[in-house]
Amino acid sequence: MFKGKVNANILSRIEIKKNYDEMFNSKIEIPQSIGNEKIFSGIKHPIYTPNKKIIGYWHEGSEKDIHNAINSSLSVHKYWSNISWADRAYIFLKAADLISGPYRSIINAATMICQSKNLFKSDTACELIYFLRFNVFYANKIFNFNKQPRLGFVVAITPFNFTYMALMGNVVLWIPSEKQLYYANILMEIFKKSGLPDGVINCLLTNCKSKTTSNVILKHPNFSGVTGSVFKYFYKNFIWVHPNSNPKEVSKALLYGAFESQINVSRAYIPKYLWKKSIKKKLIENIHSMKLGSPRNFSNLITSLIDKISFLKLKGYIDRAQNDNNCNIIIGGKCDSSKGYFITPTVIETINPYYESMIDEIFGPVLTVYLYEDCNWEKTISLVKNLKSCFTGYIFCDDRDIISYLTKKFKYYAGNIFINYNQY
Image (cartoon, rainbow, N blue to C red; front, side, top):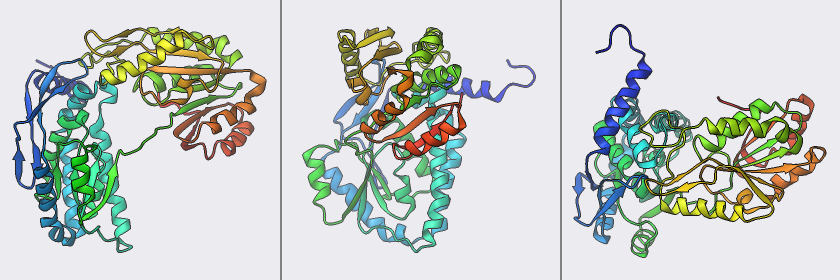
């Protein structure tokens, strides 16, 4: 029994852990959602958590289900595209309210279980709330230009940000990732409670890459577009450090950027003197303090990789680095798949700016550091440029004049550039 005032954050953690345990120890059956029906095909596939536990089963759809989903979408297209913008916006704002309230801890627990995200990176509910409200705000501006929904149906191959397409008056066939089915099932329940008409979003559990799926969808006369995670390549984020930088801030950015979420930063360009003087030692000390294990233990910052494929991929990079004369693993490198797909935080030093782990996006707790001579800092800028653009780059420098110069140089090297940025 709690006495007196209780911190809201503590109560939130208690609720997340309660939902985590209930969901982790139960067996869910996830159907397709087509029109007003839940379709349990009986062709079941297990849902594995990253620690190899089965938490339920999903029911695979058929070619007939794809046709039914298309027909369901087309049957409500006229109604949905013609209702007022305000009515559509209300439904998605209502969904945002439900996610911020009774469903927040449920969605976050599902993310911790199925994607092995730690407590601090599991708040996908927060991101989803933001996307829903953000999209409503900007959709309102777009409608001032008399934007019209697409004719026919749109296909979304993505966890959740496809909702913008439905908001604009389109009808959607959603094919979620197999790694997000628990999450998708919760989201469909939220949309139902928010008042979304049946058939506007139909959730299909089928292989989006199969010939049957692609032939039915792409050859349909009412197919009007596709959105979502259909990228062929990802270009990895980077940290670039000038010799005149704050070592403490750099080591902190490397630590959390590379290892907390395990996907933000995986390559860094650092001057040798600054690295050997303080950054390397501080980074190793901080890594030693990071705990590894199940996301249910909220003190664990490093959790399992999502599946065996990711594990073997990263293990391959580590094994090759251990046998390469141009590389030196200064910490980590241990791989254990006995109770989950765990890889200890790993830092690879290299003198080859084009070494494979400096180029390839590998999505995991592996950071590769290219060490350059301090006097050659201007030349290293072109190394970043030669590796094509990426989503985000972080630049560290304490000289304002040089920062101005670097800002211009790095302007087109990434979608976002941050200067001396450290959210921690």
